[in-house]
Figure 1: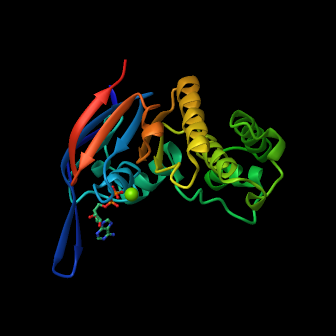
Figure 2: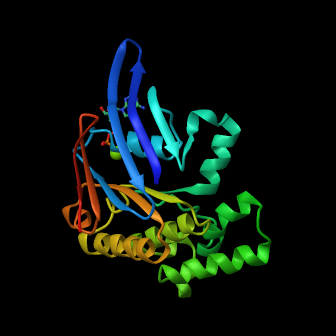
Length: 229
Ligand code: ADP
Ligand code: MG
């Protein structure tokens, strides 16, 4: 079964009398464990799409169904709880908290969730920090890291709550091409080992090449959808 199903998603931004149609009736199904790149020119609707998938924004019309549950059926609180529990984000600018160490940044989603005991939160954080190759940096602050290392921390932070889906909006846009490739390879390793579903947007051809599926959007419409063997 598809972990995620979008049907006829429209998103219209209104500014005064102006209307911008960011997504115009987009359909998309994502299976568990897929590693999907969303590509398309600037302004094509990639960020809008990821925000809707990530429950940060709601479509003007159309339906989002996660694991058989239509998001419309959830109230505001249930929707927020769902997002906190099952969906993680990785951003272009990493968005780490500068006054927290690497370990504290990675622990944060679990600390907020209050589901696990502190010792278990620490153990899980250290485990994912090692998984992204930063075991020796757990007590460092973000300013002491390179951009690529900061993005590794952001991936560890996304991973620590074992979400169904990790959404990444242009995660390599601030990195040089070599580091960008290392980051997408790390994402792919996590995807292969943990079966975590990834949906990420990118402009970068090298990064695209690592995707198992490439969804191209233009002017808010899906124009191609290619899966690799
Ligand atoms: P992409 O991420 O592919 O560059 P976006 O999803 O950011 O595309 O934007 C799609 C379209 O929606 C663009 O025309 C953009 O200008 C417009 N848009 C995005 N966010 C807003 C907003 N908050 N208000 C008005 N228009 C917006
Ligand atoms: Mg964007």
